[in-house]
Image 1: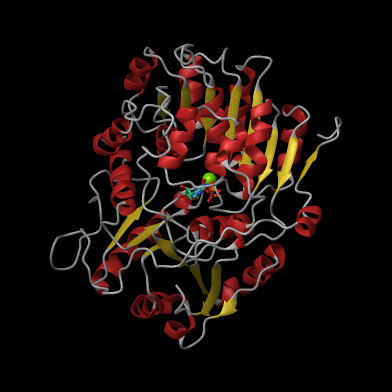
Image 2 (image 1 turned 135 degrees about the horizontal axis):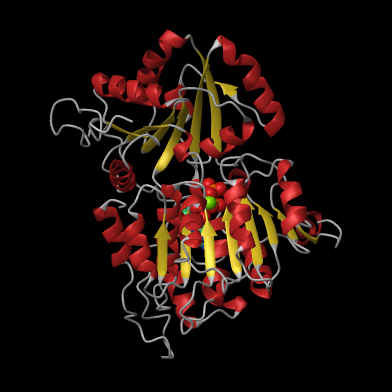
Length: 482
Ligand SMILES: Nc1ncnc2c1ncn2[C@@H]1O[C@H](COP(=O)(O)OP(=O)(O)OP(=O)(O)O)[C@@H](O)[C@H]1O
Ligand SMILES: [Mg+2]
Protein backbone atom coordinates (compact mmCIF):
# COMPACT_ATOMS: atom_id res chain seq x y z
CA UNK A 1 0.00 0.00 0.00
CA UNK A 2 1.34 3.40 -0.88
CA UNK A 3 0.35 5.65 1.97
CA UNK A 4 1.89 8.73 0.46
CA UNK A 5 -0.54 8.87 -2.45
CA UNK A 6 -2.48 12.08 -2.76
CA UNK A 7 -6.05 11.79 -1.62
CA UNK A 8 -7.40 12.67 -5.03
CA UNK A 9 -5.62 12.88 -8.30
CA UNK A 10 -4.38 16.41 -8.84
CA UNK A 11 -6.96 18.64 -10.47
CA UNK A 12 -6.36 20.73 -13.51
CA UNK A 13 -6.10 24.46 -12.98
CA UNK A 14 -8.05 25.91 -10.12
CA UNK A 15 -8.57 24.13 -6.89
CA UNK A 16 -6.32 21.02 -7.07
CA UNK A 17 -8.36 17.85 -6.77
CA UNK A 18 -11.54 19.73 -5.96
CA UNK A 19 -14.61 19.98 -8.07
CA UNK A 20 -14.17 21.99 -11.23
CA UNK A 21 -17.49 22.92 -12.73
CA UNK A 22 -16.79 22.40 -16.40
CA UNK A 23 -20.02 20.93 -17.54
CA UNK A 24 -22.79 23.52 -17.47
CA UNK A 25 -25.36 20.75 -17.49
CA UNK A 26 -24.99 19.97 -13.82
CA UNK A 27 -28.51 19.71 -12.60
CA UNK A 28 -30.29 18.28 -9.66
CA UNK A 29 -33.76 16.81 -9.78
CA UNK A 30 -35.96 17.18 -12.81
CA UNK A 31 -39.56 18.17 -12.37
CA UNK A 32 -41.82 15.20 -12.96
CA UNK A 33 -44.51 13.97 -10.70
CA UNK A 34 -43.93 10.72 -8.84
CA UNK A 35 -46.32 8.07 -10.02
CA UNK A 36 -47.52 5.60 -7.50
CA UNK A 37 -49.25 2.79 -9.34
CA UNK A 38 -51.28 0.34 -7.35
CA UNK A 39 -50.63 -3.26 -8.20
CA UNK A 40 -53.85 -4.36 -9.81
CA UNK A 41 -55.60 -7.57 -8.91
CA UNK A 42 -54.49 -9.49 -11.97
CA UNK A 43 -50.96 -8.40 -11.36
CA UNK A 44 -51.27 -9.39 -7.76
CA UNK A 45 -52.40 -12.85 -8.66
CA UNK A 46 -49.66 -13.14 -11.19
CA UNK A 47 -47.08 -11.90 -8.77
CA UNK A 48 -47.28 -14.41 -6.00
CA UNK A 49 -44.00 -13.02 -4.80
CA UNK A 50 -44.02 -14.47 -1.43
CA UNK A 51 -44.34 -18.07 -0.49
CA UNK A 52 -43.44 -19.88 2.61
CA UNK A 53 -40.68 -22.36 2.00
CA UNK A 54 -41.65 -25.89 2.87
CA UNK A 55 -40.36 -26.97 6.22
CA UNK A 56 -37.81 -29.15 4.53
CA UNK A 57 -36.82 -26.46 2.10
CA UNK A 58 -35.49 -24.55 3.19
CA UNK A 59 -14.37 8.57 9.63
CA UNK A 60 -13.32 6.54 10.02
CA UNK A 61 -12.37 9.81 9.09
CA UNK A 62 -13.23 12.16 11.84
CA UNK A 63 -15.34 14.46 9.64
CA UNK A 64 -17.40 11.72 8.12
CA UNK A 65 -17.77 10.05 11.48
CA UNK A 66 -18.71 13.21 13.25
CA UNK A 67 -21.36 13.82 10.71
CA UNK A 68 -22.73 10.37 11.37
CA UNK A 69 -22.73 10.96 15.10
CA UNK A 70 -24.32 14.36 14.82
CA UNK A 71 -27.44 12.91 13.34
CA UNK A 72 -28.52 11.55 16.72
CA UNK A 73 -30.42 14.50 17.96
CA UNK A 74 -32.98 14.70 20.67
CA UNK A 75 -36.48 14.45 19.33
CA UNK A 76 -37.82 17.90 18.60
CA UNK A 77 -41.39 16.90 17.87
CA UNK A 78 -43.68 15.73 20.62
CA UNK A 79 -44.70 12.29 19.41
CA UNK A 80 -47.69 12.13 21.73
CA UNK A 81 -49.38 15.22 20.38
CA UNK A 82 -52.39 14.79 18.13
CA UNK A 83 -50.99 16.64 15.17
CA UNK A 84 -47.56 15.02 15.29
CA UNK A 85 -47.52 14.57 11.53
CA UNK A 86 -48.11 18.22 10.83
CA UNK A 87 -45.10 19.15 12.95
CA UNK A 88 -42.59 16.91 11.19
CA UNK A 89 -39.69 18.36 9.24
CA UNK A 90 -40.42 16.64 5.96
CA UNK A 91 -37.98 17.30 3.10
CA UNK A 92 -39.35 18.71 -0.15
CA UNK A 93 -40.85 15.92 -2.26
CA UNK A 94 -38.67 14.28 -4.91
CA UNK A 95 -40.71 15.01 -8.00
CA UNK A 96 -38.55 13.11 -10.49
CA UNK A 97 -40.20 10.40 -12.56
CA UNK A 98 -40.07 6.94 -10.97
CA UNK A 99 -40.48 3.61 -12.74
CA UNK A 100 -42.75 0.73 -11.77
CA UNK A 101 -39.78 -0.92 -10.05
CA UNK A 102 -40.77 1.17 -7.06
CA UNK A 103 -44.25 2.43 -7.87
CA UNK A 104 -46.00 -0.92 -8.46
CA UNK A 105 -47.04 -1.29 -4.86
CA UNK A 106 -50.10 -2.80 -3.18
CA UNK A 107 -50.88 0.65 -1.82
CA UNK A 108 -49.83 0.05 1.80
CA UNK A 109 -49.05 2.94 4.10
CA UNK A 110 -46.32 2.87 6.73
CA UNK A 111 -49.03 3.41 9.31
CA UNK A 112 -50.59 0.06 8.35
CA UNK A 113 -47.76 -1.73 10.18
CA UNK A 114 -48.55 -0.35 13.67
CA UNK A 115 -45.05 0.99 14.07
CA UNK A 116 -44.01 3.13 17.03
CA UNK A 117 -44.93 6.71 16.41
CA UNK A 118 -41.29 7.79 16.93
CA UNK A 119 -40.25 5.42 14.16
CA UNK A 120 -42.96 6.71 11.82
CA UNK A 121 -41.67 10.19 12.49
CA UNK A 122 -38.17 9.17 11.35
CA UNK A 123 -39.57 7.47 8.25
CA UNK A 124 -41.56 10.50 7.16
CA UNK A 125 -38.78 12.92 8.01
CA UNK A 126 -36.53 10.90 5.71
CA UNK A 127 -38.93 11.78 2.94
CA UNK A 128 -40.48 8.31 2.54
CA UNK A 129 -44.15 8.71 1.73
CA UNK A 130 -45.16 5.09 1.42
CA UNK A 131 -43.45 1.71 1.35
CA UNK A 132 -41.79 0.41 -1.82
CA UNK A 133 -42.73 -3.11 -3.04
CA UNK A 134 -39.91 -4.85 -1.13
CA UNK A 135 -40.79 -2.88 2.00
CA UNK A 136 -44.44 -3.92 1.68
CA UNK A 137 -43.43 -7.56 1.53
CA UNK A 138 -40.60 -7.57 3.99
CA UNK A 139 -41.65 -5.32 6.88
CA UNK A 140 -44.76 -7.25 8.07
CA UNK A 141 -43.01 -10.63 7.82
CA UNK A 142 -39.87 -9.46 9.59
CA UNK A 143 -42.05 -8.07 12.36
CA UNK A 144 -43.51 -11.52 12.98
CA UNK A 145 -40.05 -12.86 13.76
CA UNK A 146 -39.66 -15.12 10.72
CA UNK A 147 -36.42 -15.65 8.87
CA UNK A 148 -36.36 -14.07 5.43
CA UNK A 149 -34.45 -14.54 2.21
CA UNK A 150 -35.39 -11.55 0.09
CA UNK A 151 -34.46 -10.62 -3.42
CA UNK A 152 -35.34 -7.26 -4.93
CA UNK A 153 -33.86 -5.01 -7.56
CA UNK A 154 -31.09 -2.51 -6.91
CA UNK A 155 -32.15 0.77 -5.39
CA UNK A 156 -35.68 -0.31 -4.51
CA UNK A 157 -35.34 0.23 -0.76
CA UNK A 158 -34.04 -3.01 0.74
CA UNK A 159 -32.18 -1.09 3.46
CA UNK A 160 -35.34 0.35 4.97
CA UNK A 161 -37.06 -3.00 4.36
CA UNK A 162 -34.86 -4.49 7.08
CA UNK A 163 -33.99 -1.39 9.12
CA UNK A 164 -37.61 -0.49 9.84
CA UNK A 165 -38.56 -3.85 11.46
CA UNK A 166 -35.20 -3.96 13.24
CA UNK A 167 -35.74 -0.51 14.72
CA UNK A 168 -39.33 -1.34 15.63
CA UNK A 169 -38.20 -4.38 17.61
CA UNK A 170 -35.50 -2.59 19.60
CA UNK A 171 -36.15 -2.09 23.28
CA UNK A 172 -34.29 1.06 24.23
CA UNK A 173 -34.45 0.22 27.94
CA UNK A 174 -32.50 -2.96 27.41
CA UNK A 175 -28.88 -1.90 27.07
CA UNK A 176 -27.60 -4.85 25.07
CA UNK A 177 -26.87 -5.41 21.39
CA UNK A 178 -30.21 -6.58 20.02
CA UNK A 179 -29.62 -6.33 16.29
CA UNK A 180 -26.51 -6.78 14.15
CA UNK A 181 -26.41 -5.75 10.50
CA UNK A 182 -23.47 -7.18 8.55
CA UNK A 183 -22.42 -5.80 5.19
CA UNK A 184 -19.42 -6.52 2.95
CA UNK A 185 -17.73 -3.10 2.75
CA UNK A 186 -16.81 -0.36 5.19
CA UNK A 187 -18.45 2.34 3.12
CA UNK A 188 -21.69 0.40 3.00
CA UNK A 189 -21.50 -0.05 6.78
CA UNK A 190 -21.19 3.71 7.25
CA UNK A 191 -24.05 4.35 4.85
CA UNK A 192 -26.31 1.76 6.50
CA UNK A 193 -25.63 2.98 10.02
CA UNK A 194 -26.48 6.47 8.81
CA UNK A 195 -29.84 5.21 7.50
CA UNK A 196 -30.53 3.53 10.85
CA UNK A 197 -29.68 6.72 12.69
CA UNK A 198 -31.90 8.80 10.46
CA UNK A 199 -34.87 6.44 10.58
CA UNK A 200 -34.39 5.91 14.31
CA UNK A 201 -33.75 9.58 15.04
CA UNK A 202 -36.66 9.90 17.47
CA UNK A 203 -36.27 6.48 19.07
CA UNK A 204 -33.39 7.41 21.37
CA UNK A 205 -31.54 4.22 20.58
CA UNK A 206 -27.80 3.84 20.16
CA UNK A 207 -26.47 2.76 16.79
CA UNK A 208 -22.79 1.91 16.42
CA UNK A 209 -20.80 1.25 13.28
CA UNK A 210 -17.66 -0.85 13.37
CA UNK A 211 -15.40 -1.78 10.48
CA UNK A 212 -11.83 -2.70 9.75
CA UNK A 213 -9.44 0.16 9.04
CA UNK A 214 -10.37 2.04 12.21
CA UNK A 215 -8.99 1.94 15.71
CA UNK A 216 -10.01 -1.24 17.50
CA UNK A 217 -9.39 0.49 20.81
CA UNK A 218 -11.92 3.21 20.02
CA UNK A 219 -14.49 0.58 19.14
CA UNK A 220 -13.83 -1.25 22.40
CA UNK A 221 -14.35 1.99 24.34
CA UNK A 222 -17.58 2.67 22.49
CA UNK A 223 -18.85 -0.81 23.26
CA UNK A 224 -18.56 -0.07 26.96
CA UNK A 225 -21.40 2.40 26.39
CA UNK A 226 -24.89 1.11 25.63
CA UNK A 227 -25.29 -0.06 22.03
CA UNK A 228 -28.62 -1.39 20.76
CA UNK A 229 -27.90 -1.84 17.07
CA UNK A 230 -24.50 -2.69 15.62
CA UNK A 231 -23.66 -2.28 11.93
CA UNK A 232 -20.38 -3.50 10.56
CA UNK A 233 -18.20 -5.71 8.45
CA UNK A 234 -17.98 -9.35 9.53
CA UNK A 235 -14.26 -9.50 10.38
CA UNK A 236 -14.29 -6.56 12.78
CA UNK A 237 -17.49 -7.63 14.53
CA UNK A 238 -16.04 -11.10 15.01
CA UNK A 239 -12.79 -9.65 16.38
CA UNK A 240 -14.71 -7.67 18.96
CA UNK A 241 -16.93 -10.63 19.79
CA UNK A 242 -13.92 -12.91 20.32
CA UNK A 243 -12.42 -10.35 22.67
CA UNK A 244 -15.61 -10.55 24.68
CA UNK A 245 -16.36 -6.83 24.21
CA UNK A 246 -19.10 -7.29 21.68
CA UNK A 247 -21.62 -9.50 23.44
CA UNK A 248 -24.06 -11.17 21.08
CA UNK A 249 -25.87 -13.54 23.42
CA UNK A 250 -28.93 -11.26 23.49
CA UNK A 251 -28.81 -10.36 19.82
CA UNK A 252 -31.96 -11.89 18.45
CA UNK A 253 -31.75 -10.46 14.94
CA UNK A 254 -28.94 -10.82 12.40
CA UNK A 255 -29.33 -9.03 9.10
CA UNK A 256 -27.11 -9.91 6.15
CA UNK A 257 -27.25 -7.24 3.48
CA UNK A 258 -25.66 -8.15 0.14
CA UNK A 259 -26.04 -11.64 1.55
CA UNK A 260 -24.61 -13.45 -1.48
CA UNK A 261 -21.44 -11.37 -1.24
CA UNK A 262 -21.22 -12.20 2.46
CA UNK A 263 -21.23 -15.85 1.47
CA UNK A 264 -18.12 -15.50 -0.70
CA UNK A 265 -15.08 -17.34 0.68
CA UNK A 266 -13.56 -14.17 2.16
CA UNK A 267 -16.58 -13.57 4.44
CA UNK A 268 -18.53 -16.79 4.92
CA UNK A 269 -16.37 -18.30 7.70
CA UNK A 270 -16.68 -15.11 9.80
CA UNK A 271 -20.42 -14.91 9.20
CA UNK A 272 -20.89 -18.52 10.29
CA UNK A 273 -18.85 -17.93 13.44
CA UNK A 274 -20.99 -14.89 14.22
CA UNK A 275 -24.16 -16.93 13.86
CA UNK A 276 -22.85 -19.42 16.41
CA UNK A 277 -22.57 -16.61 18.96
CA UNK A 278 -26.24 -15.70 18.64
CA UNK A 279 -28.95 -16.98 20.96
CA UNK A 280 -31.06 -20.00 20.02
CA UNK A 281 -34.13 -17.87 19.19
CA UNK A 282 -32.29 -15.77 16.59
CA UNK A 283 -33.93 -14.37 13.50
CA UNK A 284 -31.86 -14.12 10.30
CA UNK A 285 -32.80 -11.81 7.43
CA UNK A 286 -30.90 -12.02 4.13
CA UNK A 287 -31.21 -9.42 1.35
CA UNK A 288 -29.68 -8.94 -2.07
CA UNK A 289 -30.52 -8.30 -5.69
CA UNK A 290 -28.59 -11.43 -6.63
CA UNK A 291 -28.76 -14.90 -5.13
CA UNK A 292 -26.56 -17.36 -6.98
CA UNK A 293 -27.33 -21.03 -6.33
CA UNK A 294 -24.54 -21.19 -3.76
CA UNK A 295 -26.80 -19.35 -1.32
CA UNK A 296 -29.19 -22.30 -1.09
CA UNK A 297 -26.85 -24.43 0.95
CA UNK A 298 -26.40 -21.68 3.52
CA UNK A 299 -30.13 -20.99 3.64
CA UNK A 300 -30.90 -24.67 4.22
CA UNK A 301 -28.34 -24.84 6.99
CA UNK A 302 -29.05 -21.67 8.95
CA UNK A 303 -32.51 -20.31 8.13
CA UNK A 304 -35.57 -21.79 9.83
CA UNK A 305 -38.74 -22.00 7.76
CA UNK A 306 -37.72 -18.85 5.93
CA UNK A 307 -40.07 -16.71 3.92
CA UNK A 308 -38.69 -16.41 0.43
CA UNK A 309 -39.44 -13.06 -1.16
CA UNK A 310 -38.50 -12.69 -4.78
CA UNK A 311 -39.53 -9.48 -6.48
CA UNK A 312 -37.30 -10.03 -9.48
CA UNK A 313 -39.45 -11.25 -12.32
CA UNK A 314 -36.82 -9.54 -14.46
CA UNK A 315 -33.31 -8.67 -13.38
CA UNK A 316 -32.39 -5.26 -14.74
CA UNK A 317 -33.95 -1.98 -13.70
CA UNK A 318 -36.60 -0.50 -15.95
CA UNK A 319 -35.13 2.97 -15.67
CA UNK A 320 -31.64 2.16 -16.90
CA UNK A 321 -30.70 2.35 -20.57
CA UNK A 322 -27.73 0.12 -21.34
CA UNK A 323 -25.29 0.67 -24.18
CA UNK A 324 -21.97 -0.73 -25.30
CA UNK A 325 -19.28 0.91 -27.37
CA UNK A 326 -16.94 -1.42 -29.22
CA UNK A 327 -13.40 -0.09 -28.76
CA UNK A 328 -9.77 -1.08 -28.75
CA UNK A 329 -8.06 -0.89 -25.40
CA UNK A 330 -5.99 2.12 -26.47
CA UNK A 331 -9.12 4.01 -27.58
CA UNK A 332 -10.89 3.74 -24.25
CA UNK A 333 -9.76 7.08 -22.81
CA UNK A 334 -10.63 8.87 -26.03
CA UNK A 335 -14.04 7.21 -26.00
CA UNK A 336 -14.58 8.28 -22.40
CA UNK A 337 -13.66 11.82 -23.35
CA UNK A 338 -16.31 11.76 -26.08
CA UNK A 339 -18.88 10.43 -23.62
CA UNK A 340 -18.08 13.19 -21.15
CA UNK A 341 -18.62 15.80 -23.82
CA UNK A 342 -21.90 14.33 -25.01
CA UNK A 343 -23.65 12.94 -21.96
CA UNK A 344 -25.61 14.96 -19.48
CA UNK A 345 -23.79 13.64 -16.47
CA UNK A 346 -25.19 14.65 -13.16
CA UNK A 347 -22.70 12.44 -11.34
CA UNK A 348 -21.00 9.36 -12.77
CA UNK A 349 -19.29 6.27 -11.40
CA UNK A 350 -16.64 4.74 -13.65
CA UNK A 351 -15.59 1.18 -12.89
CA UNK A 352 -12.17 -0.36 -13.60
CA UNK A 353 -11.09 -3.90 -12.89
CA UNK A 354 -7.96 -3.15 -10.84
CA UNK A 355 -6.57 -0.68 -8.35
CA UNK A 356 -3.81 0.29 -10.77
CA UNK A 357 -6.19 1.00 -13.57
CA UNK A 358 -8.35 3.11 -11.28
CA UNK A 359 -5.41 5.34 -10.42
CA UNK A 360 -4.15 5.56 -14.00
CA UNK A 361 -7.58 6.40 -15.36
CA UNK A 362 -8.27 9.00 -12.68
CA UNK A 363 -5.01 10.71 -13.69
CA UNK A 364 -5.94 10.60 -17.37
CA UNK A 365 -9.41 12.02 -16.73
CA UNK A 366 -7.93 14.84 -14.73
CA UNK A 367 -5.43 15.54 -17.53
CA UNK A 368 -8.35 15.73 -19.93
CA UNK A 369 -9.70 18.57 -17.83
CA UNK A 370 -12.56 16.83 -16.06
CA UNK A 371 -12.82 16.71 -12.31
CA UNK A 372 -12.71 13.31 -10.72
CA UNK A 373 -12.09 11.47 -7.49
CA UNK A 374 -11.04 7.89 -7.15
CA UNK A 375 -11.52 5.23 -4.52
CA UNK A 376 -10.31 1.68 -3.97
CA UNK A 377 -9.63 -0.65 -1.09
CA UNK A 378 -5.87 -0.06 -1.03
CA UNK A 379 -6.28 3.54 0.06
CA UNK A 380 -6.07 4.62 3.67
CA UNK A 381 -9.48 4.43 5.31
CA UNK A 382 -9.38 8.13 6.17
CA UNK A 383 -8.96 8.95 2.50
CA UNK A 384 -11.67 6.51 1.48
CA UNK A 385 -14.08 8.11 3.89
CA UNK A 386 -13.31 11.61 2.72
CA UNK A 387 -13.75 10.70 -0.96
CA UNK A 388 -17.03 8.90 -0.21
CA UNK A 389 -18.31 11.76 1.88
CA UNK A 390 -17.29 14.49 -0.59
CA UNK A 391 -18.53 12.64 -3.67
CA UNK A 392 -21.86 12.00 -1.98
CA UNK A 393 -22.12 15.69 -1.24
CA UNK A 394 -21.59 16.51 -4.91
CA UNK A 395 -18.07 17.90 -4.52
CA UNK A 396 -17.04 16.19 -7.74
CA UNK A 397 -18.86 14.96 -10.80
CA UNK A 398 -16.99 11.73 -11.56
CA UNK A 399 -15.74 8.90 -9.38
CA UNK A 400 -13.40 6.19 -10.67
CA UNK A 401 -13.43 3.04 -8.58
CA UNK A 402 -12.95 -0.69 -8.29
CA UNK A 403 -15.72 -3.05 -7.28
CA UNK A 404 -15.45 -1.58 -3.79
CA UNK A 405 -18.40 0.61 -4.78
CA UNK A 406 -20.34 -2.05 -6.65
CA UNK A 407 -22.59 -3.16 -3.80
CA UNK A 408 -25.22 -1.13 -2.03
CA UNK A 409 -23.72 2.33 -2.41
CA UNK A 410 -26.60 4.76 -2.73
CA UNK A 411 -25.88 8.15 -4.23
CA UNK A 412 -29.10 9.56 -5.62
CA UNK A 413 -27.39 12.06 -7.93
CA UNK A 414 -25.56 9.36 -9.92
CA UNK A 415 -27.27 9.03 -13.31
CA UNK A 416 -24.45 7.50 -15.35
CA UNK A 417 -22.38 4.36 -14.76
CA UNK A 418 -19.52 3.59 -17.11
CA UNK A 419 -17.84 0.20 -17.22
CA UNK A 420 -14.45 1.35 -18.44
CA UNK A 421 -13.48 -2.28 -17.91
CA UNK A 422 -16.24 -4.80 -18.46
CA UNK A 423 -16.99 -6.82 -15.31
CA UNK A 424 -16.23 -10.52 -15.12
CA UNK A 425 -19.63 -11.83 -14.08
CA UNK A 426 -23.26 -10.91 -14.40
CA UNK A 427 -23.86 -10.33 -10.67
CA UNK A 428 -21.13 -7.70 -10.65
CA UNK A 429 -22.57 -6.17 -13.82
CA UNK A 430 -26.02 -5.92 -12.31
CA UNK A 431 -24.85 -4.31 -9.08
CA UNK A 432 -22.54 -1.90 -10.89
CA UNK A 433 -25.19 -0.55 -13.26
CA UNK A 434 -27.58 -0.40 -10.30
CA UNK A 435 -25.52 2.46 -8.83
CA UNK A 436 -27.51 4.73 -11.15
CA UNK A 437 -31.27 4.83 -11.45
CA UNK A 438 -31.76 4.71 -7.68
CA UNK A 439 -35.31 4.33 -6.39
CA UNK A 440 -36.81 3.95 -9.85
CA UNK A 441 -35.14 6.98 -11.38
CA UNK A 442 -33.72 7.07 -14.88
CA UNK A 443 -30.10 6.20 -15.51
CA UNK A 444 -27.62 5.25 -18.17
CA UNK A 445 -24.99 2.51 -18.29
CA UNK A 446 -22.26 2.53 -20.93
CA UNK A 447 -19.93 -0.42 -21.39
CA UNK A 448 -16.61 -0.10 -23.20
CA UNK A 449 -16.21 -3.46 -24.89
CA UNK A 450 -12.97 -4.77 -26.39
CA UNK A 451 -12.60 -7.71 -28.75
CA UNK A 452 -11.79 -9.95 -25.75
CA UNK A 453 -14.98 -8.89 -23.97
CA UNK A 454 -17.36 -9.74 -26.77
CA UNK A 455 -18.31 -13.25 -25.59
CA UNK A 456 -18.69 -12.02 -22.07
CA UNK A 457 -21.06 -9.29 -23.21
CA UNK A 458 -23.19 -11.85 -24.98
CA UNK A 459 -23.12 -14.15 -21.95
CA UNK A 460 -24.25 -11.40 -19.63
CA UNK A 461 -27.10 -10.39 -21.90
CA UNK A 462 -28.23 -14.03 -21.86
CA UNK A 463 -27.85 -14.49 -18.12
CA UNK A 464 -29.59 -11.24 -17.27
CA UNK A 465 -32.21 -11.51 -20.01
CA UNK A 466 -31.50 -7.97 -21.05
CA UNK A 467 -30.46 -6.10 -24.13
CA UNK A 468 -27.32 -4.00 -24.16
CA UNK A 469 -27.56 -1.94 -27.34
CA UNK A 470 -24.78 -0.51 -29.40
CA UNK A 471 -24.36 3.12 -28.53
CA UNK A 472 -25.94 5.31 -31.21
CA UNK A 473 -23.69 7.88 -32.92
CA UNK A 474 -26.05 10.59 -31.75
CA UNK A 475 -25.83 9.54 -28.13
CA UNK A 476 -26.49 13.08 -26.91
CA UNK A 477 -29.86 13.04 -28.64
CA UNK A 478 -30.62 9.42 -27.77
CA UNK A 479 -30.49 10.03 -24.05
CA UNK A 480 -32.18 13.39 -23.88
CA UNK A 481 -34.47 11.87 -21.31
CA UNK A 482 -31.91 11.69 -18.52
N1 LIG B 1 -40.28 4.19 0.71
C1 LIG B 1 -39.39 4.99 0.15
N2 LIG B 1 -39.76 6.18 -0.37
C2 LIG B 1 -38.85 6.99 -0.95
N3 LIG B 1 -37.55 6.70 -1.08
C3 LIG B 1 -37.11 5.53 -0.58
C4 LIG B 1 -38.02 4.62 0.06
N4 LIG B 1 -37.31 3.54 0.44
C5 LIG B 1 -36.03 3.76 0.08
N5 LIG B 1 -35.91 4.96 -0.54
C6 LIG B 1 -34.67 5.53 -1.09
O1 LIG B 1 -34.29 4.71 -2.18
C7 LIG B 1 -32.88 4.71 -2.30
C8 LIG B 1 -32.40 3.29 -2.51
O2 LIG B 1 -32.62 2.53 -1.34
P1 LIG B 1 -31.65 1.35 -0.88
O3 LIG B 1 -30.22 1.82 -0.87
O4 LIG B 1 -32.18 0.79 0.36
O5 LIG B 1 -31.83 0.33 -2.09
P2 LIG B 1 -31.37 -1.19 -2.16
O6 LIG B 1 -32.55 -1.97 -2.58
O7 LIG B 1 -30.69 -1.57 -0.91
O8 LIG B 1 -30.33 -1.13 -3.38
P3 LIG B 1 -29.00 -2.01 -3.62
O9 LIG B 1 -29.46 -3.34 -4.14
O10 LIG B 1 -28.26 -1.24 -4.67
O11 LIG B 1 -28.29 -2.11 -2.34
C9 LIG B 1 -32.33 5.37 -1.06
O12 LIG B 1 -31.87 6.66 -1.39
C10 LIG B 1 -33.51 5.44 -0.13
O13 LIG B 1 -33.47 6.56 0.72
MG1 LIG C 1 -28.80 -2.12 -0.44
